[in-house]
Image (cartoon, rainbow, N blue to C red):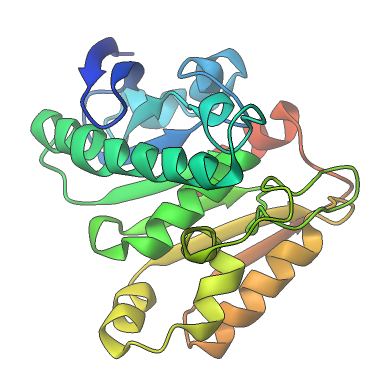
Length: 242
């Protein structure tokens, strides 16, 4: 299996960023790590190996990116306003730098956004905000609003709320989306979500699904027994839904 390591200085983030590419051809898959996860996490958790046949046969090519969650939404040493601003800079890094690299490496137009846990949020958020760059989103065990506390998980903005947080919260901005062109782009997306029946974020997934149906955006939502929020679960999901 082809494996490439890349590192460069990001002008959007003003710091070095790293990523791994697995595979040589096929649909490009943008892979976000879990909360505070690193670019090698998808490999460490056994998910690259779970997709080995698809990678070796040239059906998929993974672009496993680093996160800066510890500098943005999980950074309690800066203000909530600065947290969401840093998160927006990360999105620009992905759009302007990572996607550009992926197109240079692989002309295949089919692009998938994918992640597990908080990575599922990143994958869903960027695909819904910029559907023109994606053909499919595959989100496992996601949380689609970061501002509200859920079970043992706190809200990430300390009761602060602004327009930028709103537009980075799929369960907030999507219900009010009425632009016909934007909705037509969303309707062309293949959207796949999975969630455990005992996952604390089950209601978040149900809410997003309900909104998508109300906007006539077809999608697939699969329920797994139990919490289903661990690497062993995602190893089973990846070959099924990617």
